[in-house]
Structures are given as C-alpha cells and as structure tokens.
Length: 599
Ligand code: FEO
Ligand code: CA
Ligand code: CA
Ligand code: CA
Image (cartoon, rainbow, N blue to C red; front, side, top):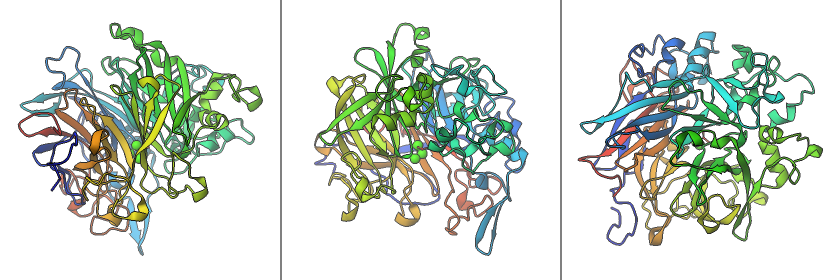
C-alpha cells in the first residue's frame, strides 16, 4: 500500500507491483489497449501480415519493427485535440531472431543464427524508419484511420534531404548523390519529439552497425568514423547495398547520425536531416520555446563518456505563421555542456573559428565541426557523461531533466560531480535550472535529482525518497516526458529481469515539494521487452507507450522461450497465437470511465 495519507506526491494512482511475466500490467483502474503492432496494415491496400511469408514490399506498407519514440500531434481543427491526431512512431532496429522463423539454431547449448539473405536484408531495411498514422478515439477506444491520406511509412528507401550547413558539402557527396543533398533513408531512429510548429523530430542513434567494409587506406574519414565505431558488424548491409560498404562509398556514413524532421500533415513533404544539430548517436531532440522566443533543442549522445548538447535557433518561433518556422532548425548555435563541481553548467558553443575549432585542428568550416561534433566537443572540454538519453525541458519552470542511463565502464578515478558513481550500473537523472529560467541561456545551475537503483541495497547508493515503495524504484532511465500538468514520467531500458525479477516500465517521478524523488510504477512491459515512448495527449487523458523487442530475453532463460521465434506461447506478446511471433507494439493507456491519468 502507498502512504497516500501523508504523501504530497503529484501523482495519484495505485502502484503496479514490480515483477515480470508474459503480460503487460497497468495501474488498477486503467485500460492498456494494443493500438499498433508490427505488421499491422497502415493502408487500405496493405497486405495482411503473414509472418511465415514476409516480403519487403509488404513491410513497406505495414507498421515497422521495434517501436521506440511515440509522438502525438492533434489534427488541425479537431473538435477534441486529444481524441483525433497523428501518431509518429520510430522503428529503431530489427531483431531477426525474433522476426523470422527457423533462422536460429541451438546446438550443444551454443546458439547460431543463419546469415542474412538479400531478401531478409530488404525486409529488415523496410522494417526500419518511422510510421505516421492518423488515429481517432471512437467510443473511448483509439483506432487507426486506415484510409487517411496522412498515413505514411518512412523507410531506408525514402528520399530525405540534408539541410543546414552540411548540405551540399564535399564530405557528404557520393556516387549516387553528387549533389550531397539527397539521402535515402533514416536509420536507428531512437527517441524524438514534437516541435511547437507541428512537426516531428527523430534522432538517428546507433548508425555504426549498418556499415561494413573498410575505408581506403589513409582516407580522411578514418578518425571520424572510429570515433563513432563505424563500421561495426551486426547488420553489415554493405553485403547487400554498395552504399553501406565503406570501401565503395566512403562518404555515405557521414549522411547518417543526424536529427530528422518530418512534417506529418503534408504526406508529400520530403523529410529533412537538420545538420545544424550535429552528428553523433542522437537519442532524442526534445525542445521548448525559450522566454525570448528562440527554440532550444536538447540533444543526448548515447554513448559512454559522451555528451549533452543544446541547440538554440537563431530566429524566433512565430506562433501565427507555421510556414515561417519550418526551417528554424537550420540556423542557430550548437552548444555542449560542461558541468562543474560548484553546481554551474556552461553551454559551450561549437562554432567554427571559436576556441580550438580552427584550421589548426583540422576544421575548415562549420560543416566540419558538425560532421565531427564529438571531436569538437572533446576539444572544448565538455563533461563526459554516463550515456545521455532523453533530455526533457520543463517549459513552465525553466528546468531540464537529463536521463543518464548507466555507465559500467566508469572507473573510480574517472568519477566527477555530475557522474559521481564508478561502475554506474543503474544511471541517474540530472536536473538543470537554466539561468533566469531561460532555456536559451548559455549557463545554469545543476543538481542530481535521483541516483537510480535499489535503495534497499546500501552499496548501490540510490537516492529515491523514503516514500518510494519497493515497487517504485528503477534503474536505467531512458525516455522521459513532462505531461501537461508539469509532471515527469520516466521509461526504462535494461532492468535485468533475470537478475532482479523486475521488468522495465513507466514510472511517475515527483520533482517538487516534500515528495521530490518519489517514484511509482504505473505500467510494466512483458518479459524481454523494454519500455519506450511515452507520450501524453494534450489533456493527459491518454498515454501512448511503446513496448519494444518483447521476448528478447537472450539464450539462457528457457522458462521464457529460447531466443527464437517459434518457442512456447508465453513468448508471443501481445497475440499469444501459435502462428504469430512476439510483436513490438504501441499501447494506448486510458482511464476506465475517462479522465486525466494519474490524478
Ligand atoms: Fe536507442 Fe539511447 O537508446
Ligand atoms: Ca533510448
Ligand atoms: Ca537505452
Ligand atoms: Ca530504449
């Protein structure tokens, strides 16, 4: 039981019991309905999903794999903005061992997976990207509008333009695109956000896994690619498409690792890679209109010992003229954060010609600074963080919440004030208080809101409030949102259910008053999954969450399936049917009888 009598928590719901099983669980009094599943038809002519006979052409017309970010924008002119809108969902990556029957073999306790075929490559490639889907609530339940002209798949074959300072420069020119302006596709889209002008932004994260082959000896991109671990084997798409082979197309990898902006209300619009926001392993791009009308975009680079960034637009957001805002993200200043032990944070500009970002250090222009953002940030002395994931600004308070998911490689002599735990297995959340509450400020104060992990184990050093129940603590914060009531919700990735008996989930975290650093479990995922999303409708009556890679438990957990497609039915969330694999899916959470969530 929660101590509701004395609590001053901003959240009011009965907590879910922490644990793990075949199902998802939501707080009592709520419905959690599966809305979109991998393979669902998005168009009237989409082939129905046949997992035993998949095809790239079919997948390109169906909901993709491994839903991560979920965003929602009301339909312009909707009678109720929270009952009719467009959903934008990232499809981050593929898990072939869970997608295709018969490709995993276990011999003498050893696991092997068949090598990809060209056909399998094309299916997986089409399962990446994003989905745009018009949805509507009818009789209290959300449903896809299948014949909407707004429904769209963005895949690895979609034409996307490079815009901003890098567009048209030499280091992004290829044989297929001598203009250096037109890229095919977006990859490994992790988190994202809505913008105030009604578009979606989406971060390209672990792009290194798609490239294979070797750069020509002494090629100028050698150090650049090494800093991003390009290439790394898992997908190795160079076997199937020349542009992913570094020996044949050495510049293609410079065309990935950006934030992509998509206008969902114009299905003909060409998505844009906004190069002014830098190139790294982008988590998300949550943003806010600062007091002076400029827009601040917070950007995490999800790698151990990498950085927290903030882009500030040069021009102001114009709430009365949507068209005037459509290229705001092309011009402005990218900054990187330096956290000091005295509690100040400085946002250091990454501008060609300033400080060390000069010809002497190999930068010839701003395009070079942006293509090699990490090296520029190294040179200005930014603070090396414990894997920055979502960074969520709070418009009303001028505060910002940074999810630092973990960093088990930080050694005792590498700890600092902002990353204070060696072998940080559970992560932490930093709160920034921007100067004068101005999100465009170049300095602020910071403190740690929460060190994550089990507070009952002293050695972990977790700092949840004593009001937090045994169900309420979590580790590995990943995605975060602030709802319209100004409350923080955190989704986790990596609670090792085998070790702890706890699945990932969605937690409600108090940030203010005596209940600060209190956390409560609202929703948990089935075994093998991680929690992505969440996204609230503007009136907080629906929370959309994404259940990513259900059944991906690894090879050594026989009671929950054995790492392959056709094992026992308990691996088959959410359908639990013999002819249907586990399917990553978006879930809509509503209150029984209606009403705001968590009040
Ligand atoms: Fe795709 Fe940073 O998680
Ligand atoms: Ca993430
Ligand atoms: Ca993560
Ligand atoms: Ca994640």
